[in-house]
Length: 431
Image 1: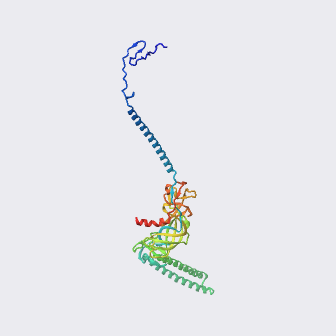
Image 2: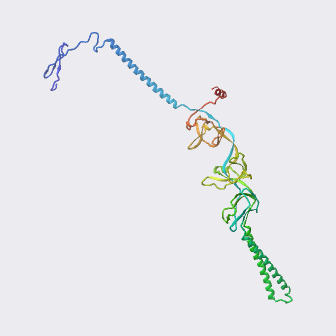
């Protein structure tokens, strides 16, 4: 027992008697009246029928909550199973086998029509004024034909004077030669001294040299006079004429005429670097001009020996037969057939491309798709021409290849039956 003993409660035998607490000091307590339950009820104040109803309602609520929990659990597991099955589903793809067809490989290029030998013609003598022009652009001329005439009013008298001087020198030389022969004839008789005979020989030699000097001077003047005639250096066609009457022509100036030697015409173009190895000199070529549907046939005459470091192009020249429609400077498009080979052809939907290049998806024997790089060389009405990457026996995914991944498992769809294919036009007509 401690220093402060707890108060003890003496429960009275009569429940109606008030309860007192007994401690160190007596504390008076008020009387508490306890009410008796109503007849026909328990201690909660509810009748047995009402209590049964409340218990039934609580049971219904508990059962509904349990059912809802089970429902949501089953639904969540079903959704998870469906999602997993969707992720693990195998795509169904349609495949196509490439069609091998003969394809004509051709190299195309652009360029201009030009004369094979474009000859500029000017003057190579003294400057002079043009007094006559005797041809027009497009005329056919022969070698040595006069194209234009320069003023020769100064050179012609010089030629005449030198021609007269030559005649004079020849006469003097002839006289000196005759005198020397006579002196030589009387030398044995002693009629003339040896000194006199030597003088006459020297005079004959000097006069003969004077003839040669006069002849050279005359030839020079005649050559200068001949240069006043602008002549054609070869047979050909006059391409351009820039000479006009009254114009002062000088050496080193702009050409007065341009001549296509022998009328030979060619096309000059440029070919891509990767196409040059397939071209050879002598191959047939077709040249097309703007506005003309008919091609001009020719042959490859020359291939460039170097590649331009900036454009990565090489020169090509195609010789053509002369034709009035082939005018130098005209824009032209050329085509050279290089080979006729069998190439696989695929639908355009089967060929894909990205940053790594052009590719297709091929279905392997293990029903897996594999990425295969290909090179496209052109298109035809049937599809895309594949020049490398396929042999023609592969199974290529025809459509929707962009949704597949390399190495993914796929399932191949069966090909449509002939009856279904035959019914398509009828169904389309009825619809």
